[in-house]
Image 1 (cartoon, helix red, strand yellow):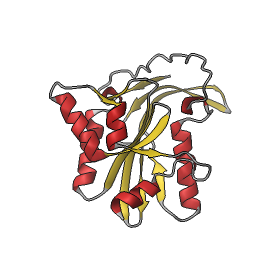
Image 2 (image 1 turned 120 degrees about the horizontal axis):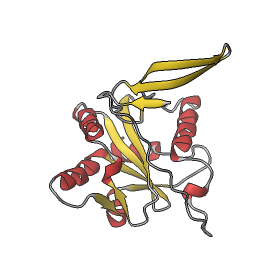
Image 3 (image 1 turned 135 degrees about the vertical axis):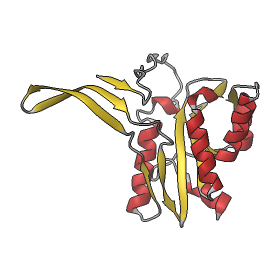
Length: 197
């Protein structure tokens, strides 16, 4: 199946690199991805009437479908209708929530190439309208909540020819570590409560 960006360019996924076997148990080896953990967390929030936050679907336009059997359809070609903004949005305590979730296996820094300019612009628009925007980063075997305003600082530094990543020291200074739990798995609402309410 071929996916295409709005400009017609074909989407080519980055080559999957198999992780080396490690003796230590890390976040990435727990069997669930950051996205799965966040989806489980958001389901817990919804079921317990704490917040309404959902993963945004990526808009795709299907162009070519094969029907090898009457009961089966195989998508052969599709296009991304538009550039996606952020991964999640919703409402918590009357405030609009909008955030992106990113993971890295890099051991020394969090590369800013994981973000796109249109995502940064979208988060700036959310903040300008009084919404709460942030990123949840899985890095250095830890989960971090980083306010969008700090991400903007790092992004602007990169745009001015400076460092193209966020260091571990910077994440520890400007980010908020999220202790992984059982229910909810990634309780980011605790941090929002501390920062905004």
